[in-house]
Image 1 (cartoon, rainbow, N blue to C red):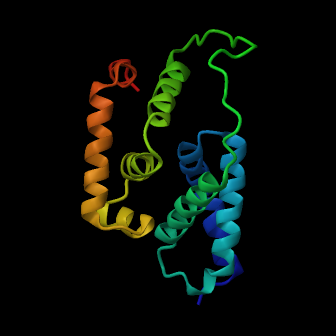
Image 2: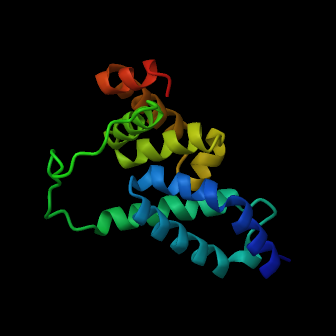
Amino acid sequence: MRDRADFERYVEQRSARLLQTAYLLCRDWGTAEDLLQTALAKAWMAWRRVGDNPDPYVYRILANTHASWWRRRWRGEVPSEILPDVAGQDETGELGAREAVRQVLTGLPDKQRAVIVLRYFADLPDPQIAEILGCSAATVRSQASRALAKLRVDPAAIAAITTGS
């Protein structure tokens, strides 16, 4: 049986990785923090029922919570293409490459983005991704194939890949 100490250890060990995954799903650090906090609160409520490997359970909560928030989000405002403040130049190039990858992921539909993030960032196998997203492994493979096909023809994606990101 799992107890509070197990949960605290899990959060200490995995919260940074879970936060990065949440960010890749929602593309905003503030929202990612809220998403992770909500997911961990839901995980805490079911912690005694979670098996020995809680990662799939928590990743599924992240993906499902993000999807429910996305469905409810008001879409009346459209972000402007040009920001009022100009950020300084990226001297190292690393942040520019990260931003390019983030932009590329933004262009994918939510399900495809979730599959790509869970497969390539979280290093999860297709059956586990299927379990997290509540679909078949074949659906995971087809979503990944479609996402990669889009990325292969996207000039921004090609530029992000060739710059070493």
